[in-house]
Image (cartoon, rainbow over all chains, first blue to last red; front, side):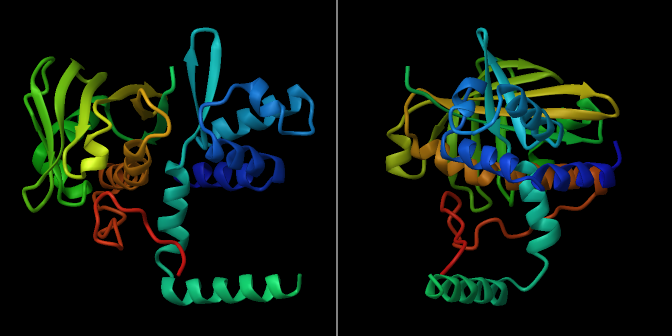
Length: 110
Length: 161
């Protein structure tokens, strides 16, 4: 697989709110089974399985078998690569100030 | 049993032999591990440690399993910060397998307690180290020079002020 294709798969995997929610769920508590993840999503088991397989294809989720249980772990390595490629090279302090400003203004809006 | 684990996976366009050598060669390691390197004979039972660029021992332990170029298991105890050292031994497993034209590197780090400050601390560092390793093997140069804006090898990276 080419580097460009890796990146396409990665951004496509991130471009879905349910898949981002799955990443947040794993960030809050890593190493969960499919059943545990289904409890938090208003979606069929099959739907969750599909989202997980896309996340796995993008290498954002790694799985480990423990006995007959398949555990899902958040794999932040591709996110680190996005950070280095798309964020770190830009001016960080100024970006930090801007995002603080945005947060404050949006909070003020209620 | 309560347990804290993380699993990190990356695919690197290289060979298992080159990756193994990158994981075990002290001089090569310094290039992607922000100046730190491991010292060991890389055989089951031999001592193992991570030494910082300033010569400080950060972590120490023993090689539990070594099956080049496929599998490495390290018994790993932090040495530098008392609260992390007090958590005792953790187990770090590195697995290398061919996957199409790339090589899959999986790093699993586990400690028999939850929550674990050690796991929290190392999980901040591993993605940067692995990402640099990938970049170095694939393109010949590293992605990041300065890993920790706080200057603390086990500190958390600040994301806002």
